[in-house]
Structures are given as C-alpha cells and as structure tokens.
Image 1 (cartoon, rainbow, N blue to C red):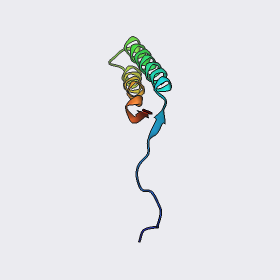
Image 2 (cartoon, rainbow, N blue to C red):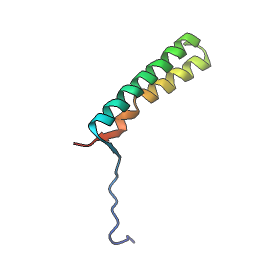
Image 3 (tube, one colour):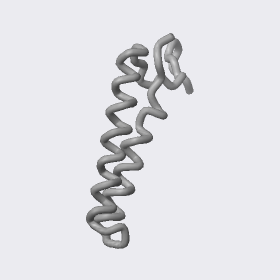
Length: 69
C-alpha cells in the first residue's frame, strides 16, 4: 500500500557554490590536521589510527553534499 502524493525521491543537502567551496576547504584542512595529529601521536597506536580514520572521514564529507547550479 502506498500513500498518494508522497515523494520518495532522495534529497541531499544542497549549498550555494560559495558556501560549498568554503565548507569543502574547511573540511579538507580539518581532516588534514587530524591525520597529522594521528601521525604525531604515532601511526601504529590506537589513538593515531583513530585520528587518521576520523581525519579521512572528515575530509571526505563534502562528497555527499550537492552544489546548487
């Protein structure tokens, strides 16, 4: 059974080009900083690996955001 009039399309986050650019740069710099902290803490330690993984995830967050065109 389906509801009439419901829109089942997926909608992502949409930002203006300028806002997207700022968010993209900030996420990349933050991710890079976290990876650097992970390497400084020791790349073979639990804290270092955790910081590296979180840094990579933060740097890739803008992959899921769309720009308004």
